[in-house]
Length: 275
Image (cartoon, rainbow, N blue to C red; front, top):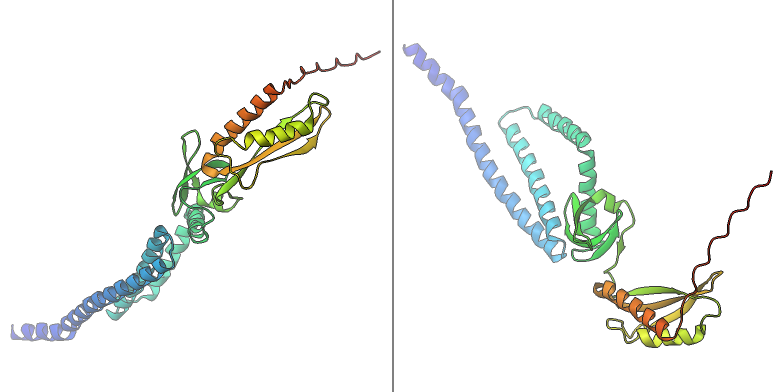
């Protein structure tokens, strides 16, 4: 019996005590490491906020930074306790390759979302046209961007589709040019008088800006007659209303001037084949 007790004491001193000391050391290293990582995270967040980056991007960078350092800390603690970390690192690498292959599309949207947040070709609340969709940006996510269209539809577009094509930002500048084309018929009206009348009439349309001044130009000649382009500038938020008002003003002016387009000519009859 005494021999068994002596063997147990010897085993405790040679095996259990070092293991216990390693466990205590691992806990100490874990708490110290997490404290240091938390301090670095705060410093990183403050630095990114001073650069006025997007809040979503700041959270993403902070989470990636914290997760990477925490993973390295766990691998270091396992090595401190005597666990072979080489095979563990190889397993993580293999898992990363498998996940990357399975989530290739999601990762492409994720990377495009990061670039959209960093480069900022558009912001929330701006009207854009991209990936075949026209609407007001409601949210720029890490995987998809949400837009509300003019007919009150909400569309989510993958960031990779947005970033991989042309992006038209209608709200970037303080004002936007609006052009209304007016086709005329040869000899039906005095073109110069109509051009001056259009400039005076559209200048008083609500929403039309004084600078740049409204302009009317002959932009095209057709077989039927010249085509005038009535150009005005307005705020991008009033584009639809101003466009309707300018079209209505043009129609009223043409009616007041007694201009009437001639009826459409019937299409010529096809020639009969002989033989």
